[in-house]
Amino acid sequence: MKKILNYLFEHKTFTREGAKDILINISKGMYNESELAAFMTVFLMRSITIDELLGFRDALLELCIPVKLNGYDVLDIVGTGGDAKNTFNISTLSCFIVAGAGGKVAKHGNYGVSSISGASNLMELVGYKFKADDAKLRTELEEAGLCFLHAPLFHPALKNVAGIRRELGIRTFFNMLGPLVNPAFAQHQLIGVYSLEMARVYNYLFQQTDKKFVIVHSLDGYDEISLTADTKVITNDGEQDWTPEQLGKRKVHPEDIYGGNSVEEAAKIFMKILKGEGTWAQNSVVLANAAMGLYSLGKHSSYNDAFAAAVESLESGNAHKAFKKLIELQ
Image (tube, rainbow, N blue to C red; front, side, top):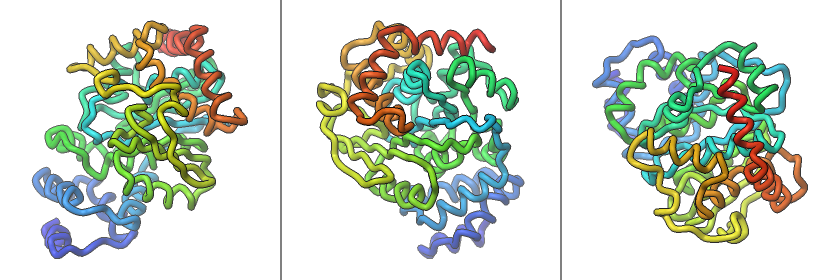
């Protein structure tokens, strides 16, 4: 690792193959914690290159335990995290609204590192049991419309960096990798990113695949559609800026989407919204993200139609029914 670090300190970058080799060696436990912390910190001081990101992704996908979902056309809604905004679990809520509207979701998530409540923290608290059993995951998808894929179960390489990431408590390049390595190889993805630079990188990467994707970045820094400002929306077909009014019928304030100071507080907000008892602002943000997810599935001819379907899913109680069914299956 000393050779690698000295190479990086000279402002050099890795080839795709070189980056892949390093991450495979990380998975084998070849470096100590101090070396790994130094390695991760370098990428906070300079931008990761596309070749490096591709190499890290190649390694994780090669090492991952794939999930077989019998050919279901699934969606993943995921944010990179690392925006330091501490919102409630918007992406996870959006997944249940999509499921309640008839979509199939394979949600990839992990414990929070740079946020108080990651998707895995929340799902664990509300009674979901993490599993890597294909048959059980398929049953959840069939009966509830959603299954949850806890990243460490499918990516053994992450085990050797989990503790360091938690102790650092800040965004690292592993945040960028999460949306690229869903073990169910989701054909549709709604990805929220924390910067325009990352939006451009993801756009380049996803254009090389056959995935149907939507990348969103709130122009005031959120890694999701926040409705606190205009949102950059990038799809297979191009990009445009959408106003809060276009996406959620109204603009909201940052304090409206605050996620609380603990996982328990985040879970209370989550359940309140899912039961249809959220505030106007909370509902609008969740509905906008769910609508964009539904739109990316290609089942609606316009975003407005997708938004109407999201509203129906929440207000009819179908989203909450999908959640209850999922928990009953545990």
